[in-house]
Image (cartoon, rainbow, N blue to C red; front, side, top):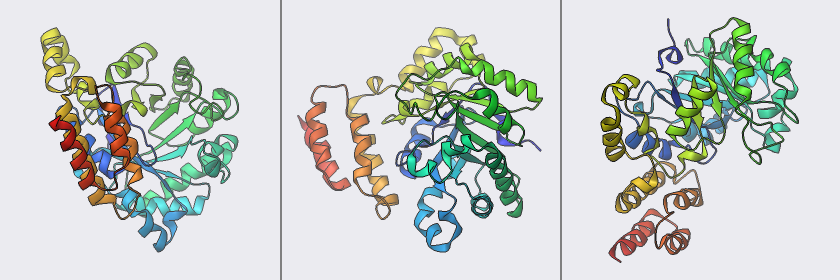
Length: 353
């Protein structure tokens, strides 16, 4: 029986899991404005990363429940979990699998000190034996739920220094369907350019393993065109996009047409798609951009108002409101708002100018 990874069209594009960014409100906007029947097999969503330890008790599950809510329009969608305790990972993933996700991804790349100090996230890179046990525990949890969904891993090229030759083969010994590589070490954070030349070495290791594991590159991807170029140049199966998606629910629509359609219709199709499905903020009419921002704000307040501070929404304002006359002044006013109603007033006043 094929899992969803095996049904994807290549190259495919993934939404990076980002804390307080890829929540249900933003994913709702990305699904509405970026996913459709034409690209459903080319775009994969991730949740924010969720603590397995926190999911192992009723109080924790209640507190974190909003992080594991999703709609059918987001499929395929992968839940990302982190933790260094095998028993807790098993229990948490039994629960997560029962919610109907298409897959579970294990975070082995987060460099945050609070996560690493638990031995989780990028801390796994320093403990390959535990990393393998965690993968096994996730599979056991999925099996306990009576489900058959795939497991994937997101990691980095090393901890303090590049260690691909020793770290990646350990992961490849386990049953994973996809491997996402953030092409920096944990120590590098995002302070240096991602090294996409490492993809070739990792592809060779996967080939040597004899397994059919999809390789996803991650790091410094600007938009879908950039992602396509990286797939073609470096040979990865897919690309994960993080910062490039900020404030841009239209981004994934650039991948709306199949390769055959592009080749058949050439420039005329490209021009049509760019006009109909602009994936850059600059290509989107300002009024529409601000109205979508307001829609995003309302949905955030409706779905997450009880769980998150309204300040979380303000990082999106910074992305939506950029690159046009009066943007700075508008951003200043938006930073002073405390709810969706106030945002609506600010936007309406600006559009009257």
